[in-house]
Length: 274
Image (cartoon, rainbow, N blue to C red; front, side, top):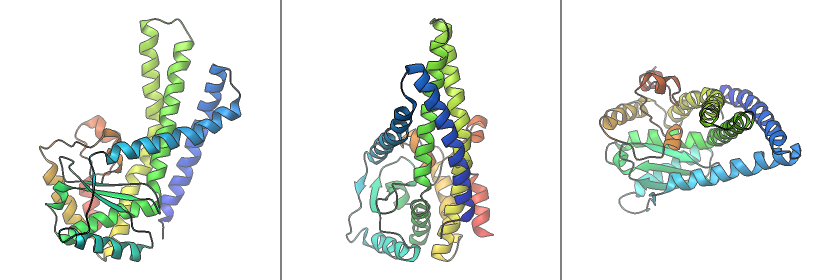
């Protein structure tokens, strides 16, 4: 059963994002002198679809299907059992070199993909790996991956509108270009504040769903501890746009922590063990 709090948050944030989208679409139609309805339809149907397909392709570059053989057969059996218990279809399983121990999920129910890093496979015990995979399956079950993709699309659209509005609103000189870039970044950041409100909470929900699926939070808590230690001093090769979808994202600077896509790992571990 999907977490009610997550449903409410996605509904509220979705309404706010839609308002941003309508505002951006209206401004864009005025700037370009185009009818409003076609602009809105193209924006809501085409841009998120293109970004979703492109993002999925970029995320899976370098990943290979996990063979159902003597080495990985127990992982496939684990996933089948989890999917049966969680009431979702079995996703495509893939392995990828990420530079750090990590995992992420993309797609939706019926077309999901779970990717684990080769570094993670060599680091975790079977019960810890089960906790990580259950966490990723929860994201697919809760459909929050789609919400994140749509939110990023709207943020990008609002940023572009702000850029062209400033650029076309005055003299075109170096100062205007710089001001337009700043306005675009600020507009995008404003939208992403609402997207991040879901992003951090969705991690807590996925942790809780994984705990329910495997009967205890201890294996996932240990996995997060190992992943956190294993990532120290190592550089991730995952696309920056995919950080929000990974199970672990190390935010070190003050600005990074302010706009973090994940809650503090220590708090996640504490919740899993409480």
